Image (cartoon, rainbow, N blue to C red):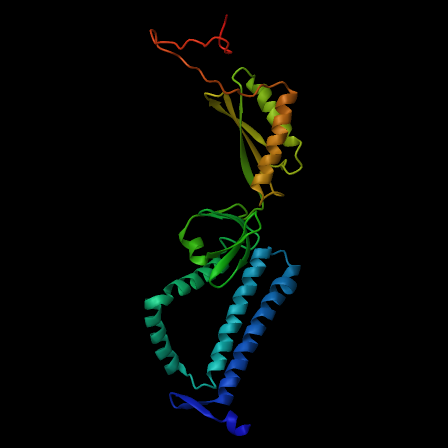
Length: 290
């Protein structure tokens, strides 16, 4: 057994790498991975869980500490293999060449992940929209971020997308969002009565915040009728815009019908030019006036 552990595998500089030194390095890296995860969970859930820091901030601090421990563990693991500062410099040069050929996307996403964890434009638990991706941030990894949609589908989004593209964060700095509910009624209705009905509908929902209070804007006159917009703030249905809009629309319809406010009815006017031939109704058809 001793002869096997002392078997020479290859040489790094002036250091001969043996089976035992390679096992020691692998054990150190494995221990570093385990320790980084334990420290990350311990700091985020237990130590910082008693503070007033948000869940996203605790998650970011735990992630950064985990990366630091893993990096130090890798440095320690390289010592039995004879990797010194000179060797690291050579390896860094080789890595730089490799980045130019195919690793730049991985490094770019990893650096973007560090920027996200430090600047915190998005955090775990935020409701975001980037491009066509809409959902809740559940995990920020080294290369990508996991976003769960309202359909309970997890999407893996590269971290660089959150740095280069415009991100809509509905939870940024305050856990509330304002939704705009468009409403159109018939032209003969009194705008004051319509505004009162819309505010009454908003007050019936327990998901609508009273501070800031709901507002109604009279948008103008359209071909179908009078156009209004109901503005409501919510914090409970922050991640469920569709459910919130559906609830408010039902309440708006009930409030309008209860007050006798008419909704627009689609009409189609057909005008024939003077002198145009007109088709005569066939005998016995519904258009026969005889």
